[in-house]
Amino acid sequence: MKLRVDHLRLAFDGALILDNLSFEVREREFVSILGPSGCGKSTILNILAGVLPDYDGCVEVDGEPVFGVSRHFAYMPQNDLLLEWKTILDNVSLYGLIHHDRSIRQKAQADFKTFGLEGYEGAYPSALSGGMRQRAAFLRTSLCEADILLLDEPFGALDVITRNEMQDWLLSLRTRYNRTTLLVTHDIDEALYLSDRILILSNKPSRILKEIDLRQQSKSRDWLFSQSRLKKEIYDLLKGENHA
Ligand SMILES: Nc1ncnc2c1ncn2[C@@H]1O[C@H](COP(=O)(O)OP(=O)(O)OP(=O)(O)O)[C@@H](O)[C@H]1O
Image 1 (tube, rainbow, N blue to C red):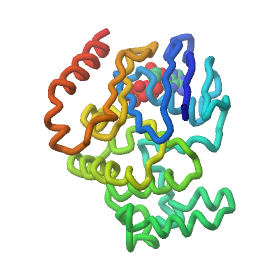
Image 2 (tube, rainbow, N blue to C red; image 1 turned 90 degrees about the vertical axis):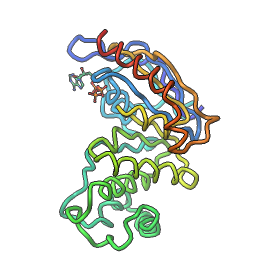
Image 3 (cartoon, rainbow, N blue to C red; image 1 turned 45 degrees about the vertical axis):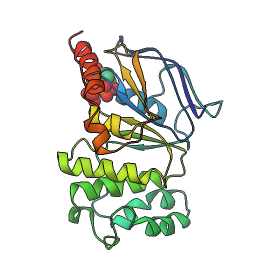
């Protein structure tokens, strides 16, 4: 098992957010977390990224316990956090700069075309569209030598067409860049379209209400349009939790 999260328990100011939350992610699996607003989805990613140290429970990668900031995880928050005063090439190569690894810059240059950024190496973030900024942020995240990507609503701020284009692009990329990924999203379609498995969380304190296994599905937009029953089932679950 690539990632094992075991009996996570965390409270903020005495209010329990996560209580005995356990789940696993397999090597190269793409798992999405869906749940009502405020149930603790970002908190889970923050714990994994090492930003929140005060929790009970255990995080294991490849069977080894992990504490604090580790090189196992690369975190992409909703905000692209591009540095406006640096070029796109400098931005996406930041990890290499910090770790004195010049090969990252070369890898970045080689990936500009795949990430739809060709010709923008010397441009500044302000010259990029919202979708391009997110692709640049995603390229920067994927160039980290972490083996697990943590994506927190990466397309949340994009309009619906750009968002769909980004999802199509990410799905097409998976054959080439198949990394173990944990995605937090509010979007049922996005979770269905991109994931091998979906974990649906309850209202806080969070527990797993349902797990949906999509590994046998052959994904396409037509497949997604045909999933109305599954979408309604997920919607009803989330609606019930919002009113819980
Ligand atoms: N640093 C903090 N201090 C106190 N409370 C916090 C802190 N961070 C988060 N919370 C609270 O913990 C709960 C879970 O927050 P979190 O951001 O993880 O939820 P979420 O499921 O990602 O929400 P959303 O779907 O709205 O993004 C919320 O009630 C939030 O107000």
